[in-house]
Amino acid sequence: MRGRHWRGVAATLVVLASACSASSSHRVVLDGRARYPDAEGVVVSVTPQQLTLDGGRTYRVSSVVQSFSSETLATVPLLQRSGQYVQVGLDGRTAVWVAAVGAVFTSSPPLVYYQGVLVRIDAKRRAVFRDGTVLQLKPGVPGAAPGFARAEIDPAAHLVVRLADL
Image 1 (spheres, rainbow, N blue to C red):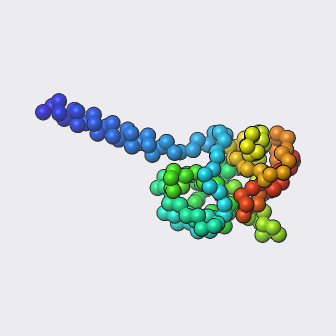
Image 2 (image 1 turned 180 degrees about the horizontal axis):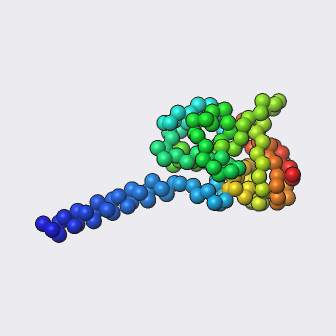
Image 3 (image 1 turned 60 degrees about the horizontal axis):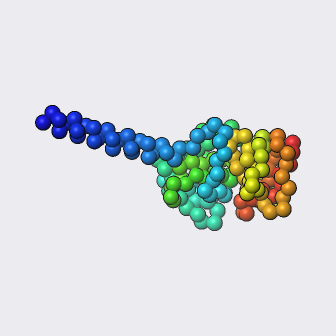
């Protein structure tokens, strides 16, 4: 009986350990590593269970979702992201991280401004910033030199339309 008991305990521990590692495997490390979003756009609606971006793209929200500011990496309330431009990390159709990029300015055309320290423009013409934010450049938009820079994002196209040294 004693041997069976320990085998049962061992099996339970293996299951628990794999469940813990599975739930944490999608956590984004906020140490400046590049974060490549699976989706991005303006938050149309958000509840603790569901996130809807422009264009009607709807995702479930993980019970352990990470919601943070792209620039400061500080935790921010997910439910206060409505109307903001965000980047989303997905596990299937479930949002596991949401990075608040910025407010949408109702200029003509609408723009989102993002400032940070540009590290490089990669081979796929993505601007990679020191805080880990990665933004796709619109074709034809010139890059900027590494250093403090401002990106102007077209929130409808999800593309940087201007990248300027500051």
